Image 1 (cartoon, rainbow, N blue to C red):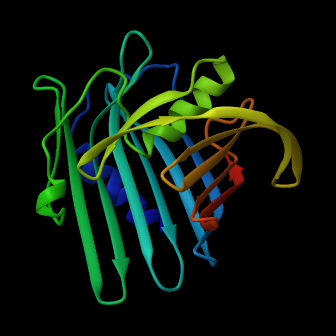
Image 2: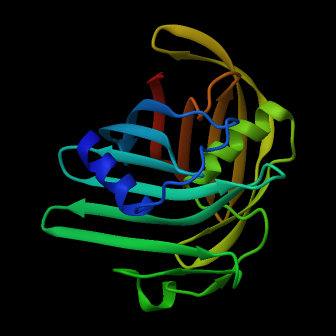
Image 3: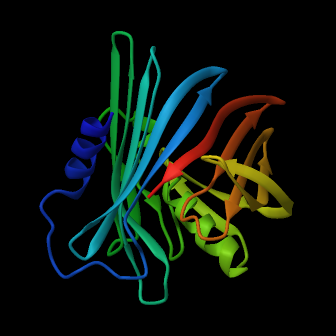
Length: 226
């Protein structure tokens, strides 16, 4: 899994090596235990500098399938995380799918290629503050800690959708044998619910659960990070 994740990071980043990346962000590797529709899986998320930009990638894998997401982004002077491009890849028995994404901030449009369906290729108009689904996890970890509003516009899969999270309380979570207090935030829309737990000092969610129609579809639990 690590080799595939490294390859995906390199594919997204290309050969961009410029000034050192902003010190406000720090590289990390986070390990997760996961379930997808009840089937156990393992996961890893990696943040790595690439010149003056950053690459964030996550991979989930079980005996039947694997899924990788990566986003290449920069941080604006005002602290916004701005996606520049990325790729989603899935692999099932006998099937493979790859969908690269491009965010063009000069034309203020996002587009998708590769195996994306024609109706999901865009372009989609983008605006300041937009994030993709993976970058949302970094944004949530920072914004919950800073006490900021949790209103986002997520641009992915050929469309843009608003996501508003509300703080619902503090809960105890355990990571690698250590119990910590985490803020739980929840977003609900069109029968889908996303619950995320954020703990102080941890750069990524310590837990994430997505449910649809009352049934859990995706579950992630942080097991370690460094």
